Length: 93
Image 1 (tube, rainbow, N blue to C red):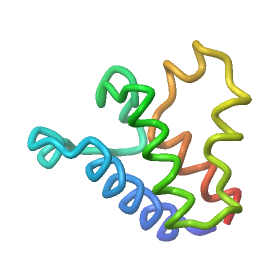
Image 2: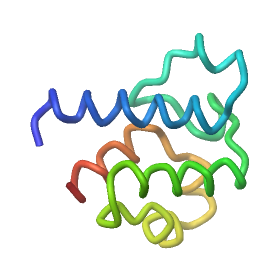
Image 3: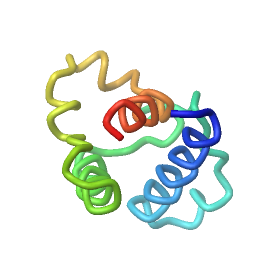
Image 4: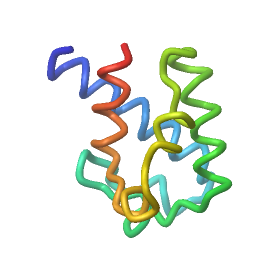
């Protein structure tokens, strides 16, 4: 996958995150590869579930977000960055 493709995946992931959060403050938030889900975005577990559903709807079943996330330890999940998800999606596509 090219850098341009990864940029497109990042833009789509950022759009889906904004949909899931659904609050005004996230519209102005810069979401990049180094943005953390926990610290920067403060996503809650229910939002992770909703994000997983939207990722599967958008990218298809080959992007098994729930399976990927379930293979991680708690400290890994807490430290996840948007770029980790983008790279996972890129490998799946």
